[in-house]
Image (cartoon, rainbow, N blue to C red):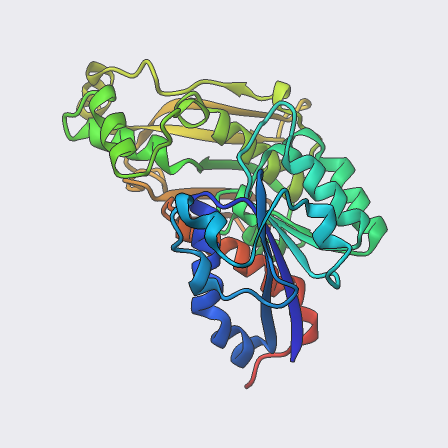
Length: 345
């Protein structure tokens, strides 16, 4: 049995979903993978939970914000450095809000963890978008893993397919619906909702954030295609290299026009290396009903890899919700330790 110490940064929707999942899946991880998940600390900006022994996920995940400070394990002002120097290295799980331009606060958290030889599983994108090469090189130097499935379309296994299932191929082109929020809004607009009505519904259901700019203006898709292309195709894109548009100006007339032509409007993230100058972009596209992503609806996502030897490979599903992102984090943690176990045949 391999003990896996976990430190969670961030206690928003994804962070809470991850805590729930650790409690739910701890037995499976012991039985199937030989991993004993030990949640050692959960940190927020104003403090955190830390008791020197594993925390009970069920005792923390459901606490309302007003009750956090009353918990006996709550330490006001607790800092990540305090925890990292007190606990044997394991995995830092990074779930703080994303800033795509500064990378903070995740950039500082991830750097601190790597310096202490902690593995990292990240759901936040900012740090990797800002310093993709630097962080990956530093992780290799430290002899630890930096995983970010949760930041690259979460429950949709983009990196797994591109890095492992398509190993040995040249990935020539990628097309993906990578943001469930925008796909949900466009789906509802095909059902006669206006943009504002569909957005308001998505926010009411917790699908979209109160400030939906990252999603509806295409930033989220741009960050994801950056991470995917840099990872599976060896690119060195920065955010400024990616042409980007969103869905804020889509009208019912645009939806109707596409429908009359037998097409569907999708916000596609694209990468193409077939020309002298590889490019990545996010653009609103009316796709034909023969396109493999035509029927991807609601909060589901999809990605198509075009390769030199395996042809066209498509994966769809992976609907957007906090539980799916938490599941991607758990998958990354299991895969960090995969070399230490073998499946029972």
